[in-house]
Image (tube, rainbow, N blue to C red; front, side, top):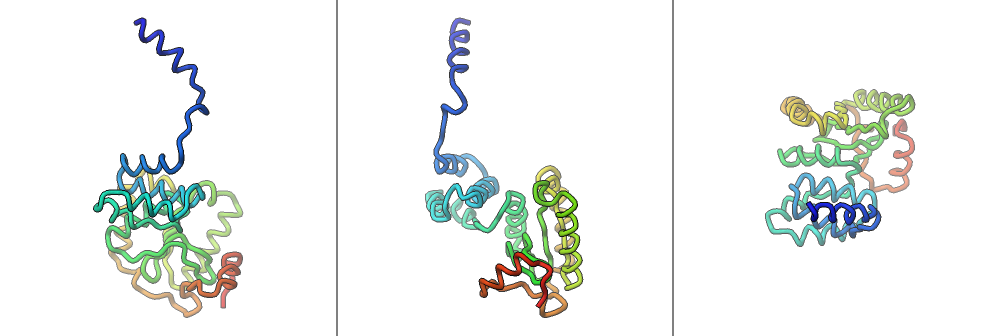
Length: 210
């Protein structure tokens, strides 16, 4: 009992700000103690928040055991959320062709493009709620479907709270192989990104068609 009584004041004396860890060391611990999916979610989120560089992430991955490093090589700094990382990794592991952050004329930049024509958007409460965002999303979806794309929108809850059932529903879409069909018209082809000026303009004006 005496030991416990002495331990409590010592613990209470520590302020939360008194314990600090380097971001790189935190990432190293994640890689050491967590699965590949969790590690990629954390690495890509840290990179998106500019807490670390892609070079630092590459060094951390290279330091992992061979089989783990091979799986972590799926790291993609273009991911902007853990939701996108999880869905993309699910598709990649099953061998589906998926590209993140593709700019599509008349639609704008989409989270994931599977094959030629399946768009998957990973919606968060922070960026997809409210009247303005709702209206923009519906306009984008209308333009996309008019151009021959199919749009699937997933919420954070579907990706993290009911992920098992969500995977099954995604597989239903994928097994229909509609993602192999090209868009209807040439102007709806994914933007290549070779013209930086046009790339920036399309990002600002998703309703612009050419």
